[in-house]
Structure formats: C-alpha cells, structure tokens
Image (cartoon, protein in one colour):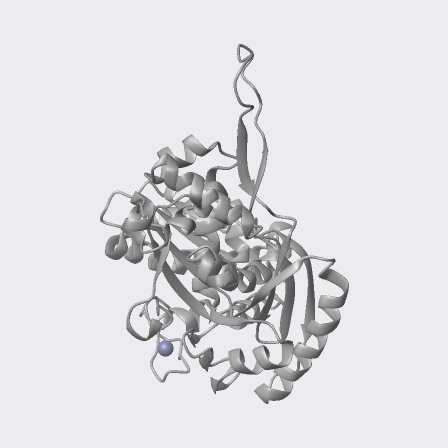
Length: 388
Ligand SMILES: [Zn+2]
C-alpha cells in the first residue's frame, strides 16, 4: 500500500491522513487529496471508498467549471458529520460537563452536572446516570462512536486512570474502566490539556498539521505539545508538566511544599480570591466592565502566563502557542499583556501577535470539546482500527 507523506512522517495510517486532510481542507476532490497527502490517486480512491463505507466520508457533487460540458461529473469528499456522535465527560473541581459532538468537533449539546467533590466512585456513578439520560435526549439516531473522558492533573491514558488530581484530592482513580462499564461505551481518558491541544490540531488553530503548544490555565495549570498534528506525550505521558515551574511570586506557597510555583500563583481559586469575586467568569465580567481590581489581578495572571509562554517558545519553538484562559479569551488588555511578555522575554524573536493565540473553543464549549476530542483523536489516528 502507498504510504502518504503525512502518514509516514507522523505515525498515522494512510486512512487517517486522508481523513485529517479532508477535515482540515474539505470538501476536496480526490486529486486534491492525493496532492495534499502524497498518496497515489489509486490509493486515494481505495481509501475514500473504504472511509465512505465506514460512514466517515460523504461524496457530493462539486461545482462544475463553466467551460466543462462533457465527461464524468466531478465530485468532492467531505466529513460525514451527521451520521456519528461522540460523547464526552469532563471532570472538574465542582462539576462534570457532559457533551455530544459531531465528527467536526462541534458541540451538539452539553450539560453541567454539579458535584460536591469527595469520594470518586460516587461522583462517577452519579455522572454515568446523568449521561444515560443525556444520551436518550441527544443521540437522535446517530451511531455513538464512544465516550471521551478528560480531566485536569496527571492522567494515564493507557490505563484510563486519573493518577493525580490535586484540587479534587483524587489519586489513582480508574475513571476509564468505571465509566466504560457503567455507560457501555468504548471509553478513552486523557488529560484535558492534551485533549484541547489535539482538538486545536484537529479543528482549531493548528489544523492541517504543524506544531503547537497548548497552555491550559484553570484551577490546574498544564501544557501539551503537538508536532506534525500529533500529540507528544513522552514516557509515562508526563510531558507538559509546567504547574511547578518557578514563575509565580516568590512568597506564594504551593501545595507541593515549595514557593513561587506557576500553578500556586495562577490557579483560578487564587485569582478569584485576589479579585474578591465568586468565580473567574465574574472576575472577567467585572474587569470588562472597568473594575480596576479585577483587571489588575487578571493582567497579573496574563503576565505570569506570558513568562511561561516565553519559556515554552524558547524550549519547544512551536508555530503557535494557544492559551485557554478566560481573561485572555475575553479581554484585549490581557491578550496584549501575555503577548508583550512573550515578545520581551523569548530569545527567538517570536512574533507574538501571530503566534500567541486564545483558545479556538471559548466559553461553555471548551470542556465538552476537550472530552470529546479524546475519542476523536483516536478516530482520526486510525479510523479502521477504531471502528473495527
Ligand atoms: Zn508547586
């Protein structure tokens, strides 16, 4: 079988190379897919036929050039977005988010399920019960391809285990096996920083290949690295642990026992407390309405994030660095602050205006996209094995 350039370079199958190319640039004619992937026209015809048989690609008539009178009508291929559905569960400090996504990563429905924290099994059983009801309302005749589970902290995707979620106080929780059994769906688990990085690579700022560092700043702080459209995990899936880099104020104590850690300084709970607000959304809204205390606190957070971003540009040199943080998503002053810090501190002459970007999935959809992307990443890596 012909191995395409994209597939050979990035460890994905030829079928996945075709699917990702159509996802990034579609709808596309077969000759355009051949050109973009480096796979032969015969190979493309074979892959397109088998992906269409799986219900992943749909054929439609292409617009005809005005001078074209004879010959076979031209067709284009696009992702068949209305046939399958992926479900997601994102587990956060005070609530879980349930979501249904199509194959283009668009959130079809989502719901927040508050939980009181504490004993993991009870929370997972309650979440699975709500997921059953959610599926009854939102599956709508589509074929479910599985459940993606995302969470902050240290996650072992091979075992489906939440190894350490410090703000929930969860250690070695086998969330994947528990939710797979309760939901009856094929289930995959990953850290939400990696999930969002792969979502950006599939549906967002870095689609179509390229390199990306994704920085998630919530109650936990995590980074994830994408190269050639694929996640870099490293041994033990431990790549991207930036929470305890010494980037915060030297006097701020961290739960790890040291002082001045990035996470201790930038965590949502710490920022909302400094701003005197009940939630980060409330702090961002107040800053947007001109409250000087809230704005000052969020600008301080943006500058701390900027110091981390400058360091990541120097070490990894990604094409783009995407920040998922509500102040930077919503407030131009915070975006300017993070970019100014990168320009001032990185050694590689980074054009921060074009290379430091806010998340492609702002607002309520962010956590649902993270969860669904855990399953969609597997589908877009090896579709035949995934649907076998
Ligand atoms: Zn620390």
